[in-house]
Image (tube, rainbow, N blue to C red; front, side, top):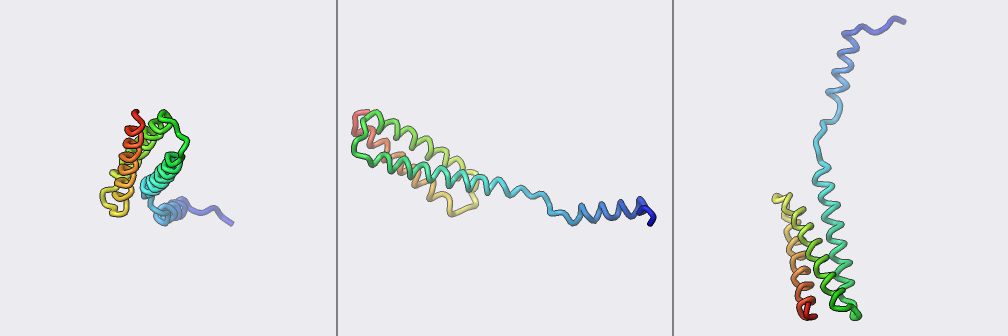
Length: 110
């Protein structure tokens, strides 16, 4: 058996490269989707903690700061995808939670 010719090897290499999937970066949306889901889950956790009756004013105001920080993180991620209609309501919901959390802190005197 003789070795393949260099021309054949080049042809095979060219076909292999042409047959490979194009490196389209779909990770950005996927990564952002995962980060958006994570931020939404954190907002839900913070909301559940804020519902506890035994929170001190300090705890309430700390939760408010955390909630607003996560809401802004969420909105920053949402803003990266202006073409998606499903995301702005998630940002709006986060901002509403931030507003409610701020109100809770203000009622506490913080």
